[in-house]
Length: 323
Length: 294
Image (cartoon, rainbow over all chains, first blue to last red; front, side, top):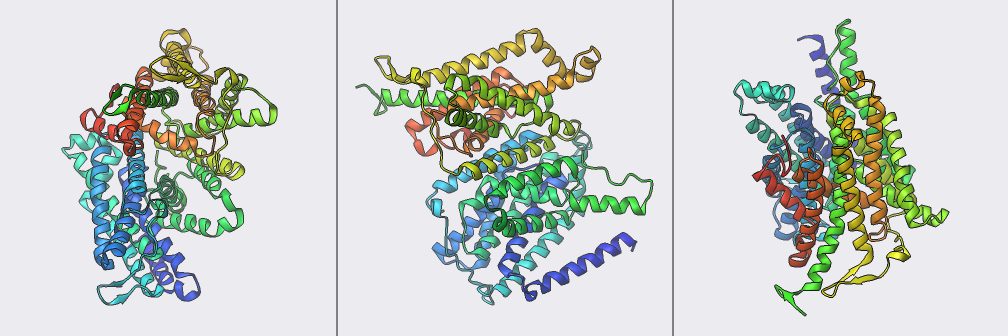
């Protein structure tokens, strides 16, 4: 085991320990759960942007739509949380297949614009569809009992369920990126014509990455709806898509832990900053965006990794900033 | 009164002119986007914010300085255009040579700053801008009444759009601009000040957006998110038309406005989404866009 791997293993161990203890240290569990849901969302988004360099501006559609499906099944049909979450994820996957199928027909900035437009389409559908409760959204969603065993009504039980789901998603994404599939995906990111010439059906890889990302986003959305007990239009709004981009960018695109750091910062800012600065939050988020793009494109975790690389391998340039 | 599909003809024609008015804004905005993208490879997400700034400039100019509509039509685009030049020199310039996605993200941040600040200062509710006196009233065309202001918006946009097209495709300055898109380094070697040209192009593009904002201010409520909603539709218009072609941007803008107006008549529930559905269809049938050269 080399030293870098050992350091990150120790770090992850400490973080896991911290995550297990946090609700006992007086941190409000609902806040932590929201943070974990958005961290999961950002990790799923990063799978697409960081490892496939596909910038989706419509990811709130998967998050919000899955939240609506889950909440609707629970409130209108009395479904249990497991079934409701599964259906939420499935609906996000289907939506992801449609979005992905359309968007991968174009590249780069067009990809971004297409996903933005489709996201807006889903927003309007959610605004007008009969089952979403229009402007009010779906309120008072009960959490129920998971697998007939775990009473999710208790914040502590719910917290550990969300934490387990987050860890599973985090490890799953690591596994996917390190799999042969992940390697091909990164090859496409680096040089698409070369990947084609090597005989890879790149559209299949891109579509699969998109559907995976959408499904995991859907899981985050479903869990978030159960945690908060409601699904509203803000889940499916374009601004949510913007937030998840910021989380990923701020933390470090293409790093595993970056999106988690980014989500923690943005959610904390929103939670506590809004008391201090009131309505200026949107403008401040804009400023952070601009600063990020101009001065640290690698993101916080990306810059730290580059710094460590420079220290352990003096003379080497370190990983290139994404160009 | 004659009817088509059980709908009175004047109602249909009224919606179609409204559609054309919206189409004029789409055309002006997608034209600016196409010019900026062609020159700098930047998708200007802040385009909607500059449109909003144009409308606010006109409104505040009237309220605080008593600047009338016709002067605002000139001054607001000029002021916003200058702001655009500053933005390009201070911020965007540092991103050339990087992935175009960074330009998109930076301008997205700018849009958030503008929208968030305007929202905080002026509140969420919109304010209306009075229609200039000489353009109130309506023309009686016998088969319908055409409000003068709407006719003016359509006319002004079409004239501005085609002048821009003429400027870029048929003049010496336009030839220089197009040369800069093809090979900026070589053009600079010929002694042309390319950085200035790029800054001016960005300024010009956002000035077009601001002009659309001033034109729109008497027909919509002026509020902080007016541009954000519009720019998403304009992006879809750009995907449909293909960004390679200036004429394509103008034509698809007007056409989609008309289609949207028509949808309002026959199936109002779908009028918000019809442009996005058309975008999806175009992507399936002709992925490069209607006028695209990919």
